[in-house]
Length: 421
Image 1 (cartoon, rainbow, N blue to C red):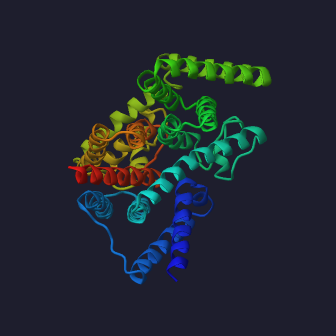
Image 2: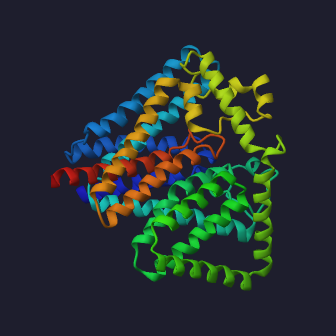
Image 3: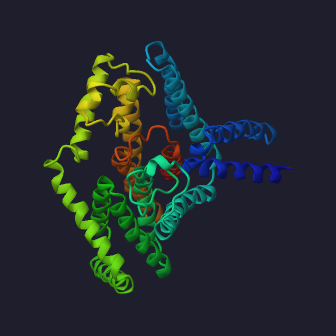
């Protein structure tokens, strides 16, 4: 009986994992992910009753659980002054899913064995997205996320399981350090080769999608890794490997290579032209959104305009100052504008605390765990640019799954460090 429950349990966990990283299910039917997650939450409780297992709630977990519960309560509290009550209820629903997802994942992966499965599952999502992108590029088709998402966009731009191409770029940006440092740890030449090709393709994908912010930070990430994590001999080997791969691609796919080269030049030129054209300037628009978000926060007395009400408040004169763009394009600014200063400061504290804990682990550990700690730290830092790529990342739960892995890795390694003292 216990074995049957375990199999059913981890199958349900896999469903939540896939639903979180594949919002296509939500776009097809908005109740799909809700039903699966709430149904699994009930099953989760039943499993613990039947198997007589106890919830593990230590101080570090309690900190995050308390924050998410407070977020739910405060979101409901904003109903008092929010203009659009339906949106407030919808976003409160999103936050409840964040809490359930984070709670279930942090309670489920208790041993190092299962944490390793979690780690490789995240890397698996990275490659699954890339396989989807290859399918999109070769067939010039997309998953049925939303036909409106592709309007005015070239058919060869990969969207993956998202409505917006920048959404997939955001996830891949956060997951890329896990792949990068997995390559670093591995001694298998085949794994290293596949890994290098996948990272080159990541660069190609972000160039084609026009995600300039993602492109800039990927280049920054690779540059830091190249300068500080690779020995001189390996630097020469890596350069030769990349040049060889690019040469083979150029020889085998001459037209495609020339097209990509021209497309890359166009993206570079568009970055240079940011200062010349307000209409096409994503940087200027984000600056305008920054000022409008701060202004909204000030007008609300730092209490927030209400959960999910950012776009409603941006209608009219404000959107004219942002060239018609109404979405925040910034997780922390959206949090500040909708939920107020206190909630935002707590979220910033949590991110900083995770960062400090990872730095402690880096100082105290060696070997494989040290490089996984680097990948977690890089992923945490890249959450900031990843959260300003899409129009809004706040409604997705995938980043809370990545946070769950980072949190569990920190817990496990800090426990081992304390045990050695």
